[in-house]
Length: 158
Image 1 (cartoon, rainbow, N blue to C red):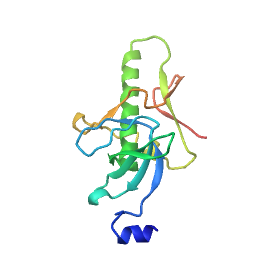
Image 2: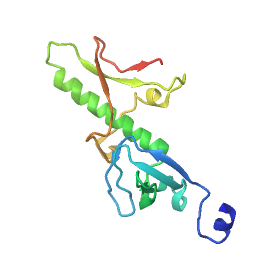
Image 3: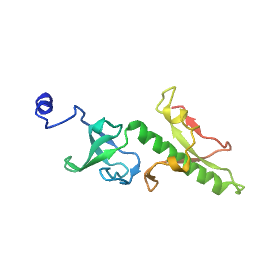
Image 4: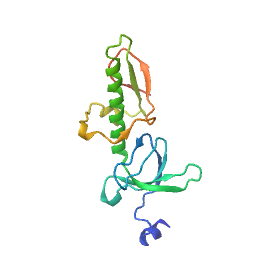
């Protein structure tokens, strides 16, 4: 069926998989898909119009039918936006508690068990204001604060 659909131009890509978003993305340009945290998305093209962005559809969680369609960042771009958001939230937290005499609460990043974790390896990156991602922090990132005397990010080994 896929080969027939590709030959008849009903579909333009062999991509078809589902993902659940872990951050909120607001629609900035026409053609972009507005995504809420934990939304289910049906990715239909991972090289949409020759670009690195993905073409995806919002999925109704009750009927599993495709709804709104638009572009979203690819996996790497979304990961970079999430890292930038975590860094920004952690920095705001550190600044607000800087004058406090209590111990600082930091963000714990839970690893997937890989030795080279892309989340951890890119934590040294800094983003200038012009490169800030278009991400909204409202209820879209589940951070686990914990009390610690250290002032750096720590990775959970398991």
